[in-house]
Image (cartoon, rainbow, N blue to C red; front, side, top):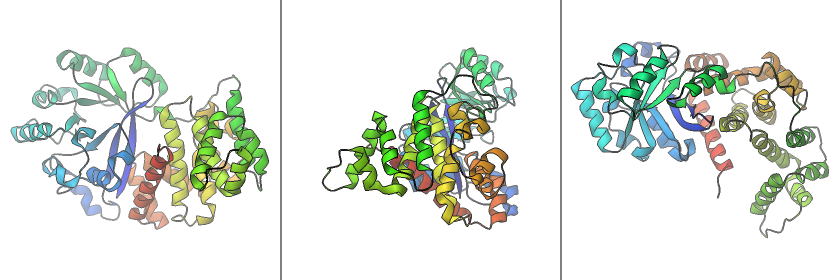
Length: 409
């Protein structure tokens, strides 16, 4: 199984929903399945299987989850496959679902059970013939590359004002800002939020970020000084509270009240893990919320993949590579300048700057996985002789780790 979450953003660049992309088979190993795409999902729905395996709150605590279904899978017994509340799932249809009586009747049945609907892959020429389906939708996905999205906006805002419009395939911040200024869309999807920074600002890094970078440099040096790290943690109230809360949960008597004592209790290895994760979150606070998630998911997924790529002894280095893979976005500087501010190994530097070395293979895999580029992932699995289900398990472990990281319990 392959599975990943693609974020959709609101106009404030906060994540408003996720699309769940899943694929059961490696088509490069079973090419006979490629020609049967219309029947993929018959009898089961891959996205629902992922939700059932992980629990919907592991994927997102409060955001809508779009699950793709086609003309065949739409008729599957959805409730028996997934016990998640119907109001958390939006059924995302494509143009294989035709504006015919049997489909309209099935949509009405699922609407009565609380499910909501969206559709994608419609062209402007399809809008009138799909009228009976469109008026039942909650969302319409408009592909920025395939249609004149401005005309689509006018059409739907006049005839179907209650439908929420989603702009797809946005590849630059300029396009996002343009569409946002024009108005009419509730969500935006594309790679625009994670593009590498080519030219940074001339302003100085905020003092609080300098403090965080100093802390990262200390704990990622060989045999670092626990006391020195504790003193820098003490400059940031939020880090102090987080550290003391975590350490006191680990002790029986809840008697840890000083930062140095807490650091000593954790020791170098655990303190390094905690600082790398906590500081990454803090560095991302003035960035879109998805940047924090992207950084941490990449870090933990890369760490979890270490064993599968025969790099078990380098798991922590791979974590750091994933963490710093968006350092240019966090610091608003080109990656070369951003890496000059932190201490990283030559392997991490080669992967992030030149896309070279063994680490680059793992980073490339992680990036293709998060983008649901299943054809390239399938190729890499064959090249590296890795089992796809093992990767899926590692990804689910990553999602659960991220959920627990921000759990209030």
